[in-house]
Structure formats: C-alpha cells, structure tokens
Length: 478
Ligand code: 9WN
Image 1 (cartoon, protein in one colour):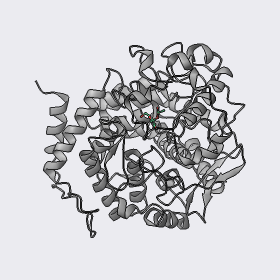
Image 2 (tube, rainbow, N blue to C red):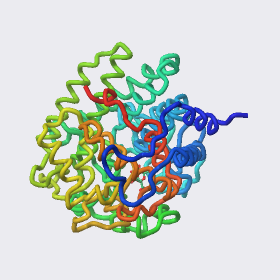
Image 3 (cartoon, rainbow, N blue to C red):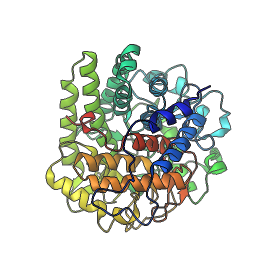
C-alpha cells in the first residue's frame, strides 16, 4: 500500500527538477556547514513528512506531541503551508478545523483545545479559559473550548498558498468560498476591536498574542502587571521544557494575571493593562490582506477593500512603528505611550510587506547583516539582537533563532531581490532543521536544537522550502 509519506517522496523526487547543490548564486555557502545535496534533501523531506504525519490528530496538527498537545492558531497556518506539499486536502482541513473554533466576534483563538487531552497536559487548560461560558457574550462557540486571546494573522496567506498547491481540488471542494467569510471577519475584528491605539494598526493584549511570548519587547509593558499568586496555578510547560529555555515564574505569573483579568471581563476588548502594536503581527496582517484580496477575486467578492486596507495598514506601520535610528521597526507600548527601544526580529519581519519605501528596505537589509543581528555569520536570524542587553542564547524569544521567522525573512529577501542572501538563509535553515531534529528553535551561534523536538512548523516550513525554493511573489504582492 502506498502511504502518504511514500507518495510525497516519490512525487517530489521525480519532479524533473535539476538537482540543486544549494550553493547560493555567486556566493560562498553559509558557515562551514554541509551544503544540502539532492540525497540529503530527500532524507530531510522524509523526516519532515514523518513529523507532520506523527503530529496529525485526525483533523489538525499539534505543534508538539509533548509540550503543545492542542491546535495552535499561527502554528496551524505555518503547518498548512507545508502540509499542502503532502496533501492539499489535509492542509485545507487544518485551516477549516481552526476556523471551526472561531468566535462570532471574528477572533480566531490562539488555542483550540482537544477534549481528549487530559487537563493537566498543558496550562492554561480549558478550565482556566472557560471560553464557552466566560466568552459567551463575545461569541465563543459552545464547542470546542478555546483560549480567548489570539495569535498573528497568517491564515489568509496560508489559505491562498494551500489553494495554489492544487487549484482544481480547491475549486472542486469550494475551499476558498468556505474560508473567505471567516477570514474576512477575522481581519475585521483585528482592525476594529483591536485598533486600541486609534492609528489603524491592530494591538496585542497579551505577550502570547504576537507569538513571541518571552521577547524583551514585553519587559517594560509587562512590568506594570502584578503577577498572579504562584500557588494559584501549576506550570505544565516545565514537565517537558527545560526551565532555562522557558519564561521565568514571575513572568508566567504575569501572563496568568493578564489572561485571568481578560477572562473575568468576558473577553471584552475595552480595558487593557497591556496593549502593544507589534510590527510582525501587523506585517502579517498586511500580507494576509493582500492574500484575502486574491481570495476575494477568485470567489467573486470585492478585492478592492482588502487591497486598500493593506495599503492603509502599510502607511500606518511605517508612520507609527518605523525607527530610522534603530534601523528596524519597533513595538509601540500603548499604555506607556512610547516606542519600545528593543531590537527584535519582529522589527525585521516587515521585509515581507510589498511596497515599502526604498530607504526602509535598504536599512532593514543593513540591519540584518549589521552588528546587531549578524545574519551572514549566524545563518538563521536571532530572535533578539545579539548585542542587546537582554540577549540570552537559550531562553526562547530572547535570542534563539526560530524557523518560522527565517521562512518569513527568506520571503522578504526574495521580494526585494536579495536572492543570494535568501539562498544562504535557506541553506542554513535546512541544515539546522535536519541536524536539530526539527527543533522548536536553535542556538543562534551553533544551530544546536533547543525547546522541543519534532516541532510541526519547523517540519512544515522545511517541506515548503524544499518544494519551493523560489516562491512566486505574485502570491502576496499587489
Ligand atoms: C503559548 C505553540 C506556541 C507558539 C508560540 C510559542 C509557544 C506557548 C507556550 O508555543 O507559546 O502560546 O506555552 O509557550 O511561543 O509562538 O505558537 O507552538
């Protein structure tokens, strides 16, 4: 019997593409690491496919069987982008399952809980969030139970890329028509209820919302939050993750306090002790608005409003978050009223936004390879400046390099014609993914794996880079 794994490996290896030695055009390979070969690519592809098959639950994919045993929002979008190379049908299902957890106010929750998983397997668990009760007024579904916060809006981009993997199958199933209304409502929610600063950008209300939970960018905004009593909760993450890699107990107490207060206010978006405009979150919203315009065009809806929205968002991003002196975008702390002067990878990801002014693109490229990130030496890009006062090579989002941000920067580099640098990043990505066992994140200097292994988006984006070394930027550009 031919399995899904056999099928994808056979399909990809007989695609007729000339074998690539992975050497960037006109440039030396990154570091002294082994350059990927066609045979190594095949091994990597099999390993990545195996992770996605093992993490599939029947209707969606868990980021990790141990540390993260439910469905996470932006993880699922990245997973769908890779899964489309194994099974476009399954990738569609991934996104449709997530949309099944969407609230009537439009929010896509950051976790959709699997009721078969024991409550003590992950904290905060469904009995903490109590979404179907506490979120009823905001439109939480009766089932599944979900968290009440959100994560970055990568979903429309993912839906468009999934469609493109097999347009005939997508049309046959009416995939785009099935997801369009939900995705449009999601963006509407972000640009209405979450425009807390009134400047046309979406704000995050919890450090878990931008997906970079422990970033030094949150240290000042979070310092105003009184930690919850440590005796009131039990951290399940330390059962599987190493304490040196994970947030401190004090910060965890603050995360719990913010989430509990949000829940106790019925998940209404008015009051906020923590409110930040994050450049990565908004850049992803822009790219997803462009993808939504394509989806609208393909389904007979109006693409114009999405294109105009993307343009307005781009202007707001530049006006509110660009900092020429820092050479990258910064977060804006809406409670303190100031830009947060920390250099994080969130400030480089907007390179994926089409139509940025030339001077900003040049500055972003310089910052990437300059003294703060030294991307040409490190291979993958650190999550926080190597030169930063809070840099920590092990603690997550405070230094380690992640694969989803590398994938986004790869796209940004190609969008602006820096293909040689993108090729170098791609080679470093594939080497680190394979040698680390598809780690959640890696040491930015050595590429040594940290966090959990067999991490779903690492595997998924590996498949995507192997299948799609040079993405067509028509996908997201105007
Ligand atoms: C909280 C699932 C998620 C990712 C986040 C990552 C981590 C959770 C945690 O894992 O966050 O949402 O418990 O640390 O920071 O980006 O979506 O993979």
